[in-house]
Image 1 (cartoon, rainbow, N blue to C red):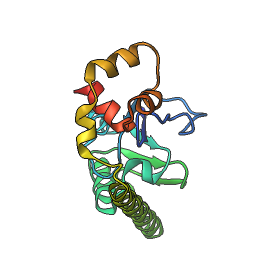
Image 2 (tube, rainbow, N blue to C red; image 1 turned 45 degrees about the vertical axis):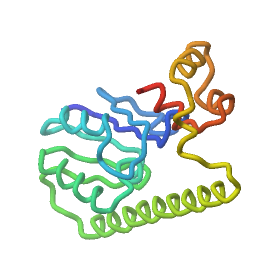
Image 3 (cartoon, one colour; image 1 turned 180 degrees about the horizontal axis):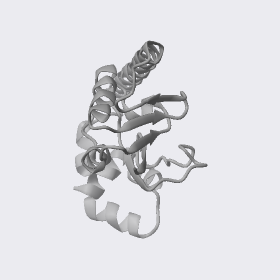
Length: 182
């Protein structure tokens, strides 16, 4: 029986220090990307790694999924593999092979719906911000193409953070990350 932690933050500039800070685990998996879908490297590695009898610990429901359907599918697939899933912030445990608690199932659906709503609101604000930036002539998808990968790598090597590089080059931290990984 392995105690496994899954951490997720939305960008490379964020850290996971507040998630399950006081606990220790046998194995950890960390994603630094959106939870809008399940195409995440560490999540997929976790799914491949986990075995019957393991317990996966997640700080909160929205760290695992921002889509209600993805959340319900993940919980069901973990349990089907014989893996227990524990959400610490919500104090909810979905025991593999255990009897389902209808109240807990309801709370999972409600909390998953809230996470999905939050993601939709984030996307809406992002669209509004892009529209405003376009109207002011500030936004351009072409701008990321103008950022030189070698310059990004050199600045990273010099010790600058993603945020500092983005500010220096006049682009987003996501552009810096894309150039670093391309």
